[in-house]
Length: 581
Image 1 (tube, helix red, strand yellow):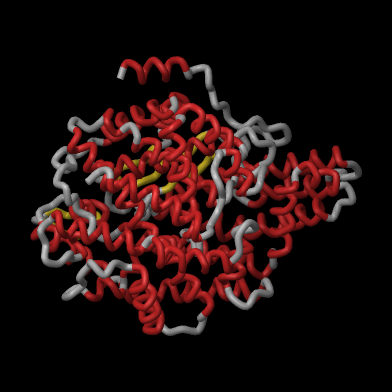
Image 2 (tube, rainbow, N blue to C red):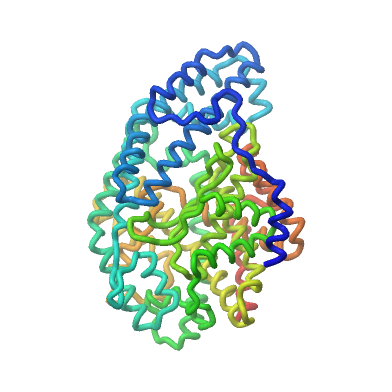
């Protein structure tokens, strides 16, 4: 620990100061449209008779985006921290319903003014990625969609509201779904079965509600796509997400490659798990338990122990990361522990106005929580490192890059678990479990993504047809080693536990894509730690000022979805896993 605090002290000169505004007062904090509209009026009246004046206009636009994103972020974070607080909910709803649609309409006019300027060509040569994004955003904008997007944002929050209120009873104790799910990693088999069935019963009681919610969300998304001139929401969202560097056909080929190359390895992993546990059949409640019986499940981490462990790993990777994490902790930008009325899952939300990020998660005290915190830390450090980019659009990185930052951080930390684990057996067991989880996650990610492709290219389907489609897709990607006898509904409705389907459609395949890059970085890190971290940080500092392939190249790896590349990466991960038997 002495080494950790020495390095944090050495990093104190890194202040990571709040955003330096040139045009907008730093204390500007809008609550109503009347506070904001004068700034848009100024943007639309600013002279743009030269490339210098056009750059000034872009700078003010960027400052305004920084302020507005911060205001929305704070409201979103707060409503997720306490889903039952009506005052927080009303504040968020006011922003989304009354302010955001007007912001989108006015920002469209500003973008139109920028890209139609005869001086835009000069700036576009200097900032091609920025202008590519502006033109794409301008092309997709439809005034009639602003209100639909507002309604969607509020309705998407319903998934979190529903799940946050659900509790299950285990041995007379009321647990959140996150707390109960954590027991599946460690409890004796009979208790795991009991807990699994309790969770399943709770989820099944919500199945109609969640199915109706998705139907409602899909209708709105379908209308957005039609209004923008697309035949389906999948193709619209592909362009809306700015996937300039790969096509829908590339993703479909990736789906097939994962089924052919990764699913057999997943089957092998689960077969070996069944053999180690001396089981005749592997049930769903056996799929995530420690099969080597060496994980430290008996030692639950307190919140302070969780943070201290994360600091130690971050420092081992790079002292600057530990310093960033310490700032977030000291200044109150962490909300880590699961509780009732707290939204599910986890996220890191960048707050560029103050040059910080907020980490939100649902820790229950297990070592797996540490991996989540390391993951979200990777996102946060990414935001710190690209904060100096000149335009706000350059700080909002594409998800293929954002998830590279977080997943690579997990694998860098993997190399330093010996700092936390007391025995070689525990170290080997945890490392094996981490690599197994990585490989097993990829087929699930692809199943969810392929399911979304079906959902949005069959917009008129019924709820029954939706479940049938899921079953057929999930059969392709789930392991034949898991027996679902007696809990078949857990298979049929498994899709309903995936938050991304409800809240961020089509944001999921990036986890699989970025995982390949993360494994490639990990392979480099094991050979040359300092050089790999230097390249990694250089890549993150780029934000979105370069294309995705250029950012990956700066990190010293390929951006590649081909079956051959997938095979090479997965074979390496499997070889490392085999060394841990």
